[in-house]
Amino acid sequence: MKLAFIIDPIDRLDPTHDTSVALMEAAQILGHEVWITQANSLTVIASQTWATVMPVQLTPVTLGDDRWVAVETWFELGKAEFLLLETFDVVWMRTDPPVNTAYLYATYLLDYVNPAKTRVVNSPSGIRAANEKMYALQFLRSTPTTIVTQNKQVIRDFLAREGKVVMKPLGGKAGEGILFLEEGDRNFNSLIEISTVQGTLPVMVQTYLPDAKLGDKRVVLLNGEPIGAVNRVPTGDDFRGNMAVGGRADRVDITDRDREIAAELAPKLRQDGLIFVGIDIIGGRLTEVNVTSPTGLREIDRLSGLNTGAQVMQWLEPG
View (tube, rainbow, N blue to C red):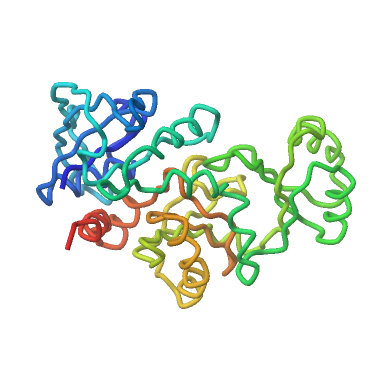
């Protein structure tokens, strides 16, 4: 196969952590061509999408003392070419959030990749439809009690009923801007005003799940099926388990409950073209559905001895 990865600048990626690098390595090891580009390179001419792409050769990481180890010069780029994206078998949209105007425009440009010739992972329209906080709310059997509002009084009433809640910005990532609130917090008014930008932006407010202290499980789904999981455990005084804010990655098994949640999501994910997805589960409840640039493969493979990147690439292979 010939694959193009739309990523952030490659020299800013961490080969020992980034799932995009894990996927590219897996493709290369299996003998596929790997090319890279960036979202700001996408161009539509005569209703077809082009990009300036470069072939990349990676030196794969190795497993050291319970950690991945990369050489200093871990990638080598070839000559840039301006190519039609439908000359690739698969185009991966792996630009990190935020999902801002530039990100959304990139998905519009990717709409003009011919799906009969090239698979885009994840589907541009699917990404647009799936706000990573809001998307989970259609699966009521799996989600905790949740409201979405910019109304301070509605949030106050919800907090009074629940006692403890977690408030999340709808466009956040990696735990950014997530707040813990409990009744009687003297900063309540200020926190709501800051989070909602003076009542102009809605936020998600969920009942606090006490099991959060035991970890926030990331389960990676391939075409709706779980292929691996990692538990992200809060450390120090931070209640968030996200690895980006210092959470510890622990080995964890995929449970029957995880499979139940995945089974509830799978038909909708497939309908929306969301092939590679990371779902977050706390205490058996679904809290988020990550579709833009889901992470976790490096930690899953290191802790569980799996090769999830190879599994993904083999699934994508024709025939």
